[in-house]
Image: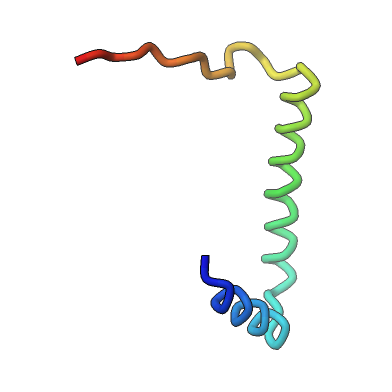
Amino acid sequence: MIPERWLLRMAQWAHRPPPLWRVILWAVVIGLCLLVFGIEKAGYWPEWMTVGPRPKVRF
């Protein structure tokens, strides 16, 4: 990654912050990801939604 690009992007966000609806949208998406992660780590994730190991295909 290019640090200069990230610094420019942060400067743009400081001068013109994103609209509130976009901040709320990102907060909801991150919250849902954390919720799914927590459910999976707690052991409540259903077995039918778990991806099993893929069989190795030899050519």
